[in-house]
Each structure stands twice: as C-alpha cells, then as structure tokens.
Length: 87
Image 1 (cartoon, rainbow, N blue to C red):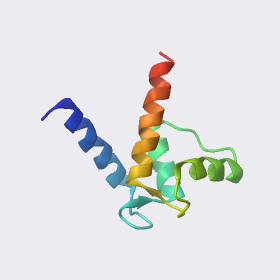
Image 2 (cartoon, helix red, strand yellow):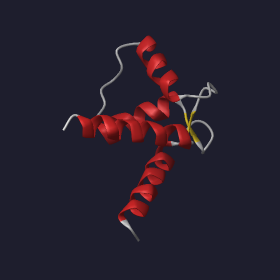
Image 3 (cartoon, rainbow, N blue to C red):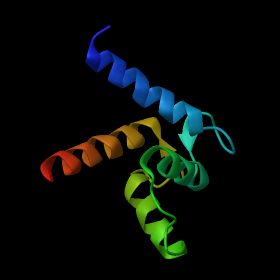
C-alpha cells in the first residue's frame, strides 16, 4: 500500500475513533471534536463557549451542527498547509 493510501486510511481511522460516541457514527459533535483535538493534537481547552462556537462554526461548513468526514478532511488539509508554511 502506498504512503498516500496509508495516510488516507489513517485519516479515516482517527475520525471513526471519535465519531459516534454521542451522535451519528458518521459525524463529530462538538464534544467529540474537542476530544479528538485534545488527544490527537494536544490542543488546549477552549477559553469559553464563544471560542468553541466560533471554531466549530468554521468547521461545520453546511451549518448542520456536526462535522462530517468531508469537513474534517478539509480541516486537516488546511492545518497541514498552515503547519508546513511555518516551517
């Protein structure tokens, strides 16, 4: 399996690890997303509800109140660009 295929499998595996704990198995709720960010990226706790809402709103492109796999992948891709441009 190519490295790219492994990376795609890993993206899906991480999403699936957190999705569906409290909502649908194919989406991330705010709580699930926060858990993923803390565990996988070492993200700190947001500094209030407004900050959580703002960040979540940036990821929830269709405004349905959850983050789909497609929205998650877009976030990871954007984060990768940001990290690589700072190196």
